[in-house]
Image 1 (tube, helix red, strand yellow):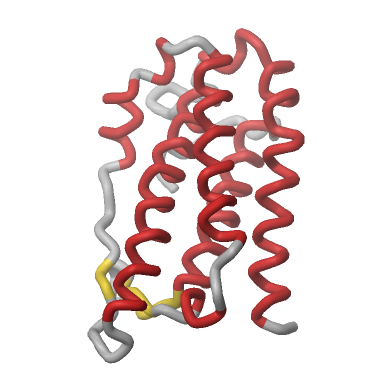
Image 2: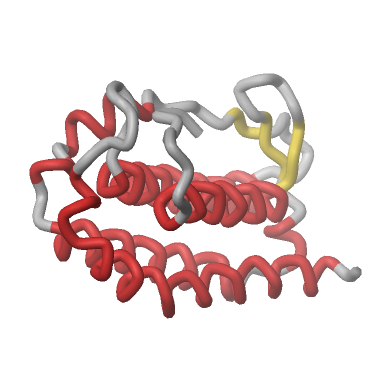
Length: 167
């Protein structure tokens, strides 16, 4: 599978989610506010976490493009982690109207699509360092972003008894 194909697949998966998730999430109604297990995130908080992930990752995608074009021989940029639980608590997703969180998720992922849709192969090949020290490309980071989103969407729409409050 060629490099263009991998990014095209990620883009298609993100577009598919944008086309289906809003209606599916609206159908859940009141159950979105209730954690399935005490101490875990509610479905609405999970969707909020995906908003936080989009905020952080769209910034990373843009910054990595810039760092790659500035100096190809430089050490890879380090990815700074964020405290996911703090972000979800600070954003007060469980006190927000469902429609607001859905609109935010859609808007942020449209921004992600605008950023990643027109990336050149040299940009996709820009390297970065994860918090665990692993060196990956921007393309890998984009694929991981989409896989992370799909993992949490599965949690939201599945009938599992517990939801993790971390990615």
